[in-house]
Image (tube, rainbow, N blue to C red; front, side):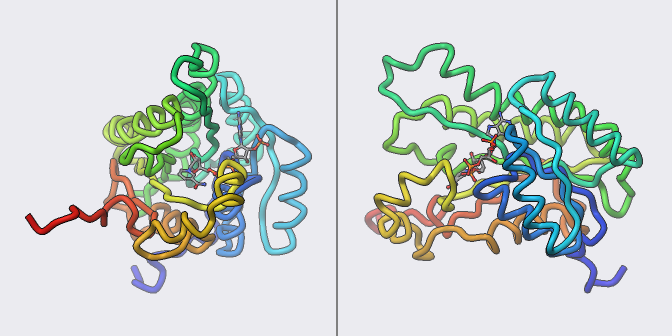
Length: 264
Ligand SMILES: NC(=O)c1ccc[n+]([C@@H]2O[C@H](COP(=O)([O-])OP(=O)(O)OC[C@H]3O[C@@H](n4cnc5c(N)ncnc54)[C@H](OP(=O)(O)O)[C@@H]3O)[C@@H](O)[C@H]2O)c1
């Protein structure tokens, strides 16, 4: 097959959870521009409809709102997608997440579960329920894809007291490997590890210290749409057909290029 089509995603069907804001919206916009069909989904029907109204000017997308923090919500999303795409989908992007920050003593079971139910549970249950639809669209040369979302905070501990969030993002790295083992050869399972991107979750951080965030990365800037879309296109195109159980850090060098402080 031609090298020129290695990164071609035209005609593929994607489900991107949490695609009404931040990185999810960036990826939805980029994939629609690249000729894919994107199922835009988040909890809020109006937010989904607004994104679809915007992106339909560029290409193909549709809104299917769902709350993927529960097993029932993940199943409902799969059922609605299966009705629209009975022949299968090519990629599931488990991007939706929430966070919680509070002093250690205030981390109760409810707040802990709220984060894990969406970040880990939602990614797991969606992967489980979408498997038959992903299997159906898979070919030996171009398997279907699951892309999970971790965070650089799974590697480098932040100052913020967001224990359940960082633990959930570390869990996703291992869940990626375990699912990759189970779902091969029809589905690859990989993980994007973002650094700082402007988004709703990062609104306060960017409002108060955008310059500091940019300066902390060796590449001297925050993430932007091309960075998220480029990583996702690689992990969902023929270019990565033999890559599974892997994570890709997209952070301008923040995590991997730390200095040792001396040459000893
Ligand atoms: N931005 C960063 O700097 C950064 C850094 C590291 C990792 N990440 C990771 O990258 C991913 C995207 O983060 P982001 O910052 O772009 O997020 P964001 O702007 O806060 O957007 C989160 C999205 O998830 C949806 N969502 C929230 N709860 C949901 C639920 N229960 N069911 C379905 N959808 C739900 C939200 O829409 P509704 O509220 O309408 O449901 C929204 O569309 C996350 O996995 C995050 O952990 C981000």
